[in-house]
Image 1 (cartoon, one colour):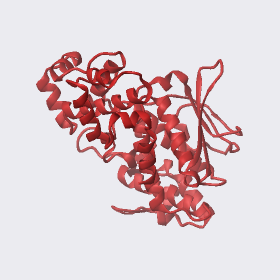
Image 2 (spheres, one colour):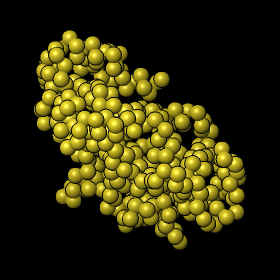
Image 3 (spheres, one colour):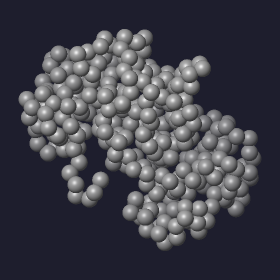
Image 4 (cartoon, one colour):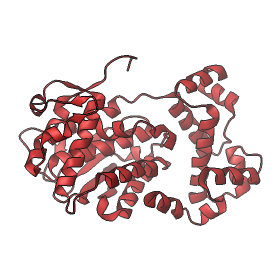
Length: 354
């Protein structure tokens, strides 16, 4: 977006949630108390006009939260919901590719039990189609269609953001009956919608499961609510130099190459070191910071799934010896690499219980 341009979201994307609230004893006005002032309910219930993006994100998030609170028994706690929400981002962004990110989402939701959803990933035999199934139970029993659509928007945005560009859907599956008009949030997927299915799911090309995760935990700052609550988020994605550089470093490591220094990295990108540094500063990062983040993430992958010795991992990541790698890994994670290789699960449990 150009600097100074007002970013908006069509009001119609909020309409299904707003219309659902009164059916559960919640006033729409309660969700429309935005930081910039209350939004008028009447025109929004008709889906008219555009809403400032920040107000929309706040209202959309409040709608989903209030609906969950109204439906859940015992009543859902918004602070616990928010905490779980932040943790799943941290958990998924540590994945190496989209397949692992999906499986981490499945694992995380199973780990938080009644506060989570029941998720599953499968690949249809002979069709090369991946299906990510979204069942809002046990957290939200008998969820309304609008809340299911919001969950689908959430995961589609997360998958697209993690991999740096929009994931194209081949079809959407819903357990609900066909309505008079499709939820506009589902129409933006541009994919056929099948109603009356046995499960709610997002279907996409199975090859996309191999797409590399190009984001880091640091990239989440200030973006969580936009990823979660802006239905148009994945259409606003732009490829940053940081994401391009991270992808290049990960690809280099995956092919068995040593991570380059700043001069070699700039040469691989076809730009000068000064241009690379200037553009990264605009994105609030540096080459050394990005390289350190990649070293950390690659080290975790190699320790989890590889057979390289500590000296081999150190060489792959560009460290002078195994000792300097051990010291850096302990600074990143709080544990020695040998302890992480023996049992990476404590890191997961620490995140879930913090």
